Image (tube, rainbow, N blue to C red):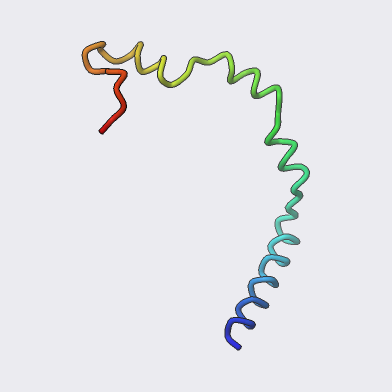
Length: 66
């Protein structure tokens, strides 16, 4: 009986939050797949290249950690 009450309360909370915050999944997906931002971030170097340029060469190795 308690599980049913919790499930009903959870569903009501989800519906309430959806109306309060007006969540639109289509808009979220559009912002997630922004080609303009991908083009901008492709111009930056990878994290590995940044570390190799900033750390002394003796501290780095190509071996994976144990």
